[in-house]
Image (cartoon, rainbow, N blue to C red; front, top):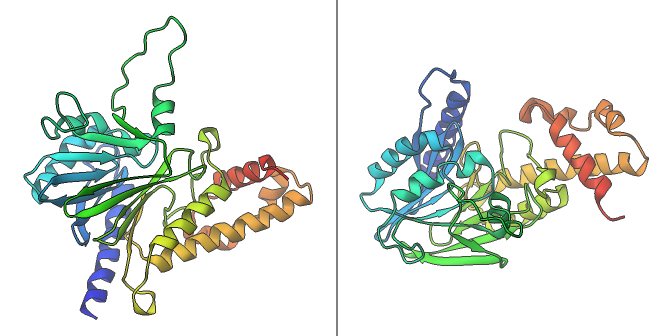
Length: 312
C-alpha cells in the first residue's frame, strides 16, 4: 500500500509540475523538476515536455533533450543525480522540443566515448530522424553540418545496449506520431519511455507531413501495452513516461488507446459515407473527450487525412 501511495503522490506532483510549467509566462524562468520513477530511472519535467534520465555506475543516459535554451539547466539537474558524464542520448522523434538540446548536452558527454570520435555522448535515433534532419546532398553539393544531428542511427526494428546494469531496448514505431518514432524500454527498472506516441494530457499529434498515421499510432500504443505489466488491480507495475504529462501505468495507456480507437472508428464510418472534413468536424466525433484532452481539430484533421489516404 505504501508503494501505491508513493506512486499516486508522484502522479499528482508530475501533473502539477507540468501544469505549472505550461502556465508560466514567457518572461518567467521555466521550472524544471526531477521525479524518481522506478529502479534507476527518473523523469525530468519541464516546459518542453519530459526527459527520461537513467543513472548508474556506467554514467548517464537521457531520452530526449527538450530545447537548447534549457540544456545548461537540464545538465545541472542531471548533476544532482550523478557526477558521471552523459554517455547516451536517445531521440524519440524529430520534434524540436525533443532533440533541441542534443548538441549542448552531447558536448557534456564522456570523453572518448566508443561511438564518437573525439568524445562526447552517443546520440541515437532512427534513420528517418537523421534523414529528415540532414537530407542527402544533391550531386555536386557539399553536405552542411547539422547541429544536434544524431551520430548513431539505427534502421532495424530494434536496437539495444546494456547500460547501468540493465538492458535498454529501443523500438522503432513506424508511421505513428511520425515515421521515425522510438520508444525505450528499461528492462530491469521496468519503465517505458514513449515520446509523443503517448501524451495523456492532450490528443495525439499525428504529423502527416512527417509520415505519421492513426493506424501506426494505434499499433505503437498496443506495443506499449505488450511491454507493460500491471500490478494487482491495475496499480503500479510497469511505469510509462510520456512525451508530455504525468508518469503513468498500463491502465492509463489502455484508456488512451481506447479513446484513439473509438475516435478512429467514428471518423472511419463518416469517411465510408463520403463526408467531407468540414462535415466530420461539424459532427464532433471527439465531443465526449474534449473536456479531458482539449482542442481536437488538428487530431481530427490528421485522422481524417490518414484514413482517406489509407489503401481501401
